[in-house]
Length: 376
Image (cartoon, rainbow, N blue to C red; front, side, top):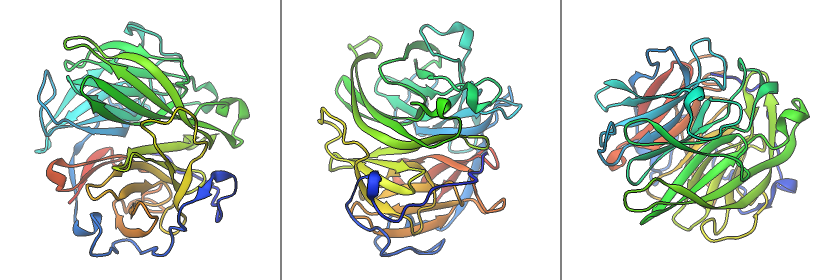
């Protein structure tokens, strides 16, 4: 868990990009919603299980739902990646746990930096960037540090694991620099990974805000029985605000989700907005910081993000424990209190989130309690 002590709130577009919609026509209080909202139909929050494995890793970040049984992966289970070790040092977590809907927890992977099959500059610290590709391939980001010190943060990599939980390859370089969050879409044997990166010039700035955060589209292909191979990298977003932070380690562009319109939605944490990158699947150039879909109002330092089945954008706040639902046109149509602990409630506690099977709820991790929870 971390707490942001300062977030820059910007009321106009300025350097953050064009404005699609003001996005503050409705800024409901926690628990409020409109009849048309997806999250508005859910009334309860339940704890599914603790995410602390046997080695004591803490700070659950990434969440991915298994949709097909293969190897260790069981349909309907949830994978959760841990960012901290048992000493609570950020950027040192090495485990992915698998949580069944009934709360049974097993260890999917415990990764050793000394036994990686490829480069991962700096070591291991598993981030919110977590997804499962067809064939049971699990991809997870690493943004490593030494003892949780922001000044030691390194570029890291994307780790590719097979369905048995073994790392089989790494993707590094090519602009991958502090992979913070990720989403994926597959077409046959080709997958596009959309990765937000937060370490471009950040460490060198020593805590000052720099505008160098990027979003990459990594094209990955695989043969029928082969491993995924990185075949192309395109920078589709750039210039996002980012900074190192003693409490948060690093703050920058976080959650990403692909809309049905082909736009990639992004939680732009420091600028306190939901941004969008048009034509994310096909564009060959950077959209810079994209267009602003919604800013301020109930959005308070957005982190994790996913797309609801109706096309709305779901994001969770770093400055309080709320989930906010935003339409593609920018209206904030629902707010749900997910974490009420701490002062202020839920600060820095919420990262990864994913839709539950059959859209029966929203899974999310709570760093304040080290649990996987369900809004339903």
